Length: 464
Image (cartoon, rainbow, N blue to C red):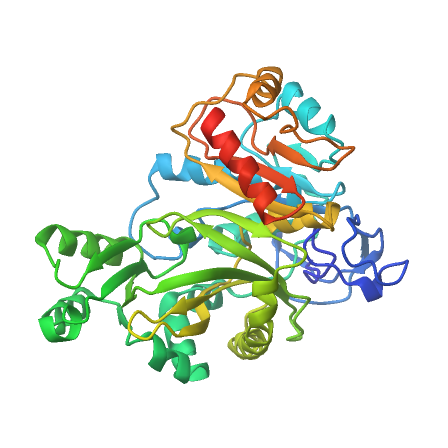
């Protein structure tokens, strides 16, 4: 039996008009305990993805499965993912808990330590339940809908409806995004320059052959090479048109082969970059849009997200974003997709004229986002600016929360650095202090962008 994958959805997307108390925008609300009609049948001991007359289940909350390696599973390359990469991706689950309500449950690699739970609870933060195994009574909610997630879904008593994994593969690809950008925003494509998608080695060889010095290097341009699926910007390459070396060609071929395709586009001088989140219902209805500033490493990898209640720069581009997302929702619905959507957009400056342009569709990801925690915290602290930032797993941290608090307090001018639940300001470590190849994440909660950026710098200088 299957049920519709409807809302509420953690602390990220709420339907205020359907919740008691009127318009509760900005509040951290738990899931409602309403009855959900479920229908379906069993055949030969297996659940079928179809609807018949069925029973009624009470919503016990969601079980989140953070298959953060989702993008790489869509590439269709032969063989399994490297165990190291799989381990690191699954460790990303720890970063997701701020997005969840107290009624939710998060599947994590190991049971959390008492020290970790006490540390977070002492900060006045309500936590979801953590567990290592499946709780079949809950509603399965994966990071993204691939074939593994679809199979896991059938282990639950009330499997949720989901898009066809083949549809997800198509709409989550950069090949699809490029076609969509050309179709919906031709004027932006003309302004930002010609892009190329290489689905096969022959396509890349032709692009390299056609990339003459006059077309690539005379204008001093640089290029960005991206795999066919997002993967949070990991594994991108940036290069000058004059630097087509054997080593570069080898790297481009590696991206193409391991990620099921390669997108090549001109590098631009990005002024501000935004991530835009929404949920597309099966009916084609788009939920409220949640936006944040993106923070990226120089190589393009995701470094964090910033949410500010009053972002004057965002207000400048809000009409462009709203118009673009309406178009995208309509097209995704026509493609047969429903579920979580993440869209990247940015404002950029032309190097020759200095003009500022806005590119409303850079990447389209048919999945959840690691920026969810920022918006979960913004629900808890609606009048605060939130910065979630990541640090590499190679940097060492204290062994326990007590030592962590001491180190934070001992930093120069850092007596007010640890998060204070009374003032609702400060920093705390989102991920547990456990050995392993995890990428740790910090939450900085402050009065404005300058405040949280100062906190981040103190933490990085003093500890990380």
